[in-house]
Image 1 (cartoon, rainbow, N blue to C red):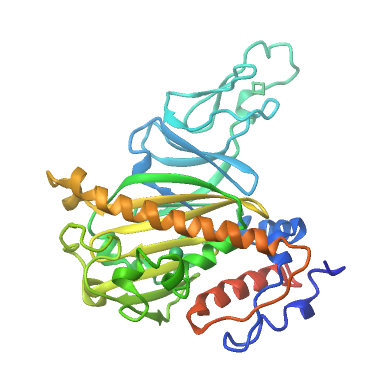
Image 2 (cartoon, protein in one colour):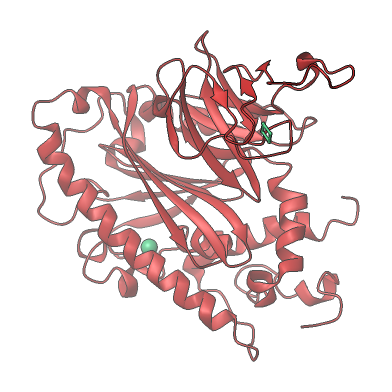
Length: 382
Ligand code: FES
Ligand SMILES: [Fe+2]
């Protein structure tokens, strides 16, 4: 590796227009220093997508995630308000809860300090002899949480702009889908041995469909059939639109649900796929919306969460449980295809001998993602 990996001259060729540009150096996907800079400049500052509010519909419902080394509890409190906290006890730091569930309070497994669902420290056994100890001074540390149409986002930066500013016109562009009362019917978690950018980049290019998804997506939505257009937008996201017959979420020949009734315009005839920077992929097709959520853990470790959302009208159909299996099968197969290729790419990029490549015209958003990252990682004013 070069002595100063943040010297802008290393990235000058990635900064060129996509048809002229070179790919990022391999170290951008493998180096702990580059990853730490991304955590500091990106994930600690942006609105990080963390799933759906209907994952925790009732007071006391909670789930936990870990994002860039920060364990987080997301909970619905007694008043029904959604909250997020750092999942670390204020006594001596132990993680309070794991997984997901429902409870009246959080009790630390180490010395039994107990916290209310709103983060307040309710009780701390045998602390009477500790001078000036006041429970009110040791609540769980809150994390900013805001929502749009039932989608949850957290931000570790108290000074960050509101979520609505960050998202720009995305809520308008997806209004037909979010207006259908989406229900997340399945959330599936994968642990990947690859850099978060590799999966994000993969999700936003159609170049690999003919090869990686030769027997699956390519059978009904090849790049020749589906025109993957780039849609200009405002906000911290990039969007493509592909017009195609049928649903993008089914394998060829499988039966599906009716089109979402609230869709209008081009959304009725294909798939809108916004990519919310830095790492969230959404695909909104004619009968469903699904998302791919990434939680980076290190340069070569990432958790992927796939969420499947359907309009309430479809979920309430008597044949929902049968018909939805076709959608789940399609996602299970194609996500495995993508995961496998991303891990192979990580192995190749980890080679001590490596070189730079070039982008195909179908990889315009990959180039955009890489430059969005460089804008922040190399910013001399940050
Ligand atoms: S570390 Fe939680 S009660 Fe001691
Ligand atoms: Fe793919």
